[in-house]
Image (cartoon, rainbow over all chains, first blue to last red):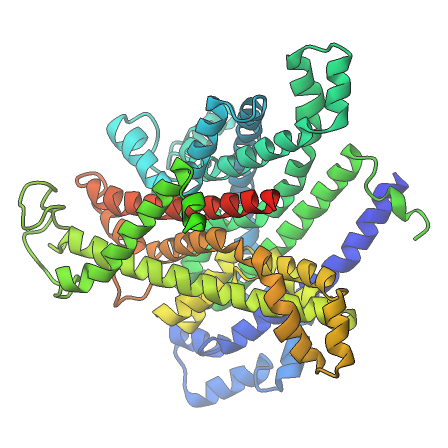
Length: 328
Length: 276
């Protein structure tokens, strides 16, 4: 356990620096945007030059850039992301409200792509060079070439418009007053298409990685040893080759989380799912730069947390990780 | 010649090369074949495909020629994909070389910046950049490059770390070359091959990112883009799904062509390496 704690401490120190750079970067982008918070406020309320002057002074916008950066950091330390212009509410509250939907979407899509992708990868990698291996390789490449938003539209045309099996968008039936289990089932049916659209794109990635990793594992000595012990082929594939080939995929889970968050922006827009991604698009449409940067900051924190969890899982799965730093 | 033959030895690579050649021809002849403005009205609105031979793929919601839009869209996709990938590879190679060759504090700072760029979802970064600076072709290229340079930077750095210990680098030091000159004239060119091996993946990602940006309405409004066409078609998805399907198929084929050709190149060089 101390091994995992040591790893965690080292990663946390690195994360603080990374987060600081992200914050400074987003502050610079905020500065580069035309107009400031007072301009945005005045557009919706109206006011004269004297009031603009007063507001700039009160909100500290007439101070030097360094002071403003310090104020920005100080506010962030208190988890204050500022005020959203489009929603007229604190940005933190708006984001927290949308976050669970995106987490459910991302979690389900990750489970789908990781589960099905690695299973198909094992199937392809069990016989490298066979017809099914080549077929799945080219097929997964084709799948990886599909833009997620377009796959979403095609799924809507087939399953929602033509077959009418599934709802066309949204997160639940409006004003249905469902509760408990029936509400959960309602949300689940609404999520089938968006989760498929998001998950199938990344499925190809896990499939290809699992396949390549299996091909590598077949050449290891322990496979030869397992063969010499007379184990059945199925047991060698699952217990020896696939088991060792799975480790690099766990690392990929963390690296892929940032991509998935980006992908959910378009998917949530296509399916009108009220999550973080759709919020980003609404922020762009409403020219709400502080909200957009708030979303970027929260996404960065989310990605860091996911990667920490993945690192811990990795340390748990592979006893070699972090063991060499006992003296450090 | 033998290199080309080796590249075309797998059916996948041949398919990829054919798709890319077709695409390049489409992009080149677009202004000749469809000399007018592709965004001008060419016929009645929402004409289905394969009915009128002067408008083979029909028209969209505003009566624009879908085939002309498709050809001009190929121009945008290819231009943005290639320009953004070239810029990303250039930034990545320079940052990676500086970090790997300088080492110490420079390395530490540059790599933490790279970490930060990788922590922010790249599509969100591109979205924020375009929405703040304003949509135009140059800005879209810059936004995509900004979100794609980290991979090349890491690969270049790893390669430079091994190259800087070679004898010819020590030799260049002895004859008194400036460190920056050594970094960019001796080390960088030799570190390039593994970086360039990433180019097909980066071009493909750039084309997909451009499509997603213009799908969300953040493309250059004066250019026809496949993503924009899909977004246009989406408003009449129930009655005229082909308006979204056609440009989407073009996108899939293009990206697939880039992947297949890229794999062909990697495989043919891998064979050469294992033979030598």
